[in-house]
Length: 257
Image: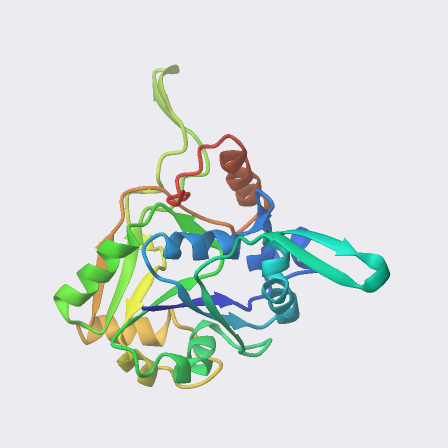
């Protein structure tokens, strides 16, 4: 099964990091968050990727063009311009990088890569800035079991502030970062039938608007409920949080060896 990953947005809320690179190339633990997402999928046997590039997409292309070199031990003999690879470490990935335009919206980017997934029975689709301990194998199995056109992963938004339980001025309890207001949200990690592509009209189509709304109205949208860890990287605060989890060896999304 293929996985389509959105990697072309501007990332304006992370402008501290995105002036020189696209948001999915911001590093967590020395690796782009895009790499972390691909490793999550690969741990579940999904190794063929279609990356929707846009803003500064050449940075992503250069990263994968040099990926093998970055992952291997090498010796350069300068006087005769030779390179010897001592230990080869590579992923079992096939990666297709597609320029989907600087201004395209999320649906428009998916529409631009239609030729790469239109013959598939189903394909995965996600954002290039969110990680979690999602059971992608179960998500795919759930999608196949219900036979509808689309499955999204429903999850709880991460809490940003601790909550106080107060009675007559006395703090009785302190809850560290409760998960939002209890309502689940769209966490991405979709599994889709190629039939959904017909619902995307143009580059300006926002996937989360008309396509998802009409899928729900037509009873073609199902939700796989994820009750574990999920975290988007929307702000510098989020990036610092993810980095701290990784450095402390407590990154829940690291489901690979």
